[in-house]
Image 1 (spheres, rainbow, N blue to C red):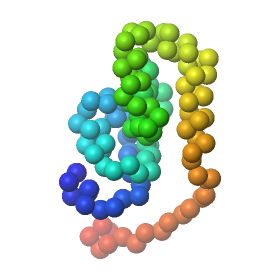
Image 2 (tube, one colour; image 1 turned 90 degrees about the vertical axis):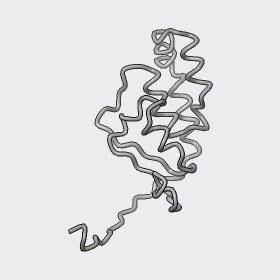
Image 3 (tube, rainbow, N blue to C red; image 1 turned 180 degrees about the vertical axis):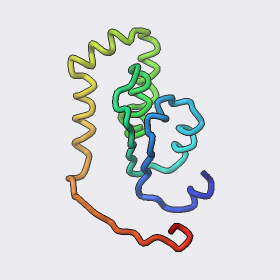
Image 4 (cartoon, helix red, strand yellow; image 1 turned 135 degrees about the vertical axis):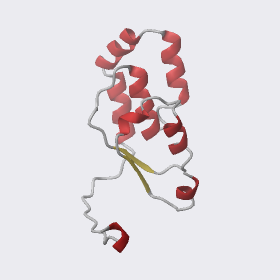
Length: 120
């Protein structure tokens, strides 16, 4: 990770993003050491088993909105059912909508990159 941090990255794209569903795992902690930037998770598992797992992914993507206090509140409540009911009522969706207001307009971009000889 240290070698990668020497570059000024504008984007951090994580394949198999569902691996970050545990906010205490080494991978998540390592990736969170990168300065704030545009972050993208690629996953074939968009739905998580618990709200805490969903929170971990959202916290990685938008740490300012889904801060550490949120997970503490979830653990204090101790009821995934109550939180899931609130989700159905639109509270999480509302938070995501507010977060999306800060996103720039979608601009399709296709970038072609030449490979090095060692990559052929």
